[in-house]
Length: 132
Image 1 (cartoon, rainbow, N blue to C red):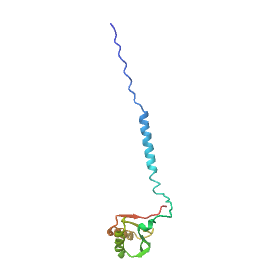
Image 2: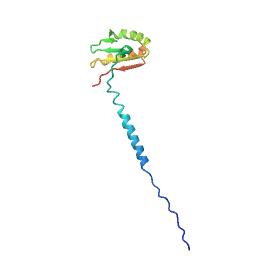
Image 3: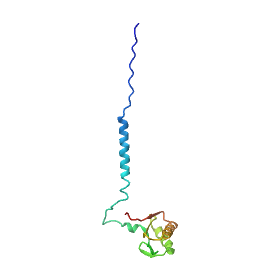
Image 4: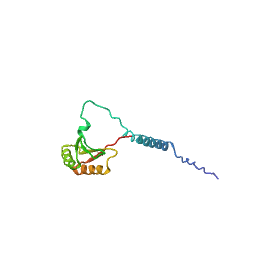
């Protein structure tokens, strides 16, 4: 009797190097994407002598701790703010308003200014703050 020899099965092996490559690429991606988030807050903007000043394009409402209201460095009141703001927003292309306020201003004054800005037609309302 003749014995039949069986073929050896190739051993099944899982290669780990492609898996390790994928893990390292994901790790690098998440490390790089998380570092791009923090510099957006801590910017030092360059200065330029030519061009249009950013203050000319913006509409800024300033609130003091005493309750004074300024619209682009012009003193006004909350009552007349709405009509003046509507006039400025119709002339503006950006429809953006920035609200600046003193640290100790009344919270109700901030909410009133925010409400007036939205009622006047502001699409974007920004709140200015200082980075500590």
